[in-house]
Every structure is written in C-alpha cells, then in structure tokens.
Length: 230
Image (cartoon, rainbow, N blue to C red; front, side):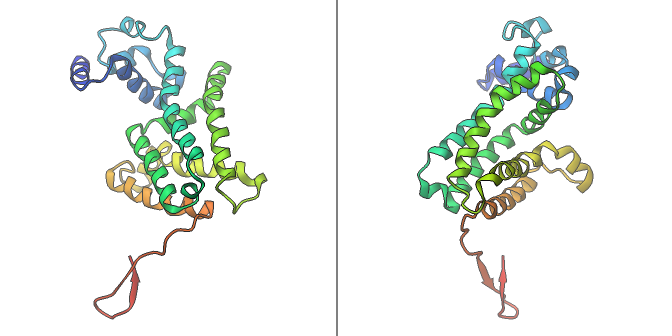
C-alpha cells in the first residue's frame, strides 16, 4: 500500500521530499513531535524503510522544522502580498475576499497545518518552541503591519487582540475540525461546510476590519411581493 502511494505520487510529479513532508504534517498534527513516529511517517510516504527518510532529513527535529516551514511560508507570502497591495485594494471588500479565498484554498489543501501550529505552541520542549517562534514571529509582525494599515475601527493597543481573534476565526475552524465533527455530527471539512465557512468569514472579517461590504442582495418574493434577503 505504501509503495503504491509513492508510485502514484511520482506519476503525479510529487517529489519524495514533499511526500515525506505531507505525511509528517499529518502525523505531527495528530500526535505532536514526541508522539509521532518517524517509522510511520516513512511508511505513510511510501518509503521502503525508515532509513530512506534520513536521505532527505538528517533527523526527526530537522523533519519537524522543515514541515513547519513548508506549511507557514506560503501563508507568510500571502500576508506579505496583502501588505504590499495598493491601499485601495486593502480597504475594499473585493480585495479582502480575494485574500481570504487564497488563504482558505491553501488551508483546504493543508487541513492539518492549523493543528500542527497549535501543537507547536503547546509543546514543552524549548527547541520546538524556539523553532516555532522563529517561523511564526515574522508572520505575526507582517500581519500586524497589515492591520495597522487596514483596521481604522480599532485603537492601536487593541490590534494584538484583533490579530489573535482573526487567527482563531480563520485557523481555529480547521484546528478544531475533530471537535466540530463530534459536536455537529457532520464533516466540517466537506466542500459544502468549508464553502459555508468561507462565506461567514468574508462577512465576519470585513465587519471586524471595518471594511464596507456591498449591500446584501435581495429579491422580491414571488408569493407576497415583499422583499426578502438571500
């Protein structure tokens, strides 16, 4: 089975390194650094044995840090692009929607990443906390710059709380997908559920940032002639 995974991925143009990182992202998110097994990651990636993994990563720590970096860096690029966008784009609904679409598209492709980040912040090991900090602090600083130029509705002293709230709104949904599934008895990562969450986020984030959303579209009821929201 594992070998079949590797062959299928190679035919799709996915490198062995990316196969390993994809498997590691899921295992580290599920079990944390200590609980994840390198042997299981190697098997998930379709490698012949654990030793093959060390041809790509010198040890488990290097694999963990590379997994975090691969997950976080694309988010950082999206935030940086938002930071450098024209002011008009950063302050209108269309520009905000486009940014959120790109972030959510990425999180749909990497649904384990938010939980991986969550676990990194909770880990007791000093090395692991430092590794997470090195990767996350620049992203936080970039995000704060975006908020400073976007959210006129908040005092500067409130921006850290705003940043935390936005993080939980966007990433928390994916990080807590297992809990949500238990509570609502449905798959929160299904296409329909994520589309619903996407619509909610666009409205909620726009309101938090004070972005003027276009008027909600309405249509006249066929039955009584009254206007109703859709």
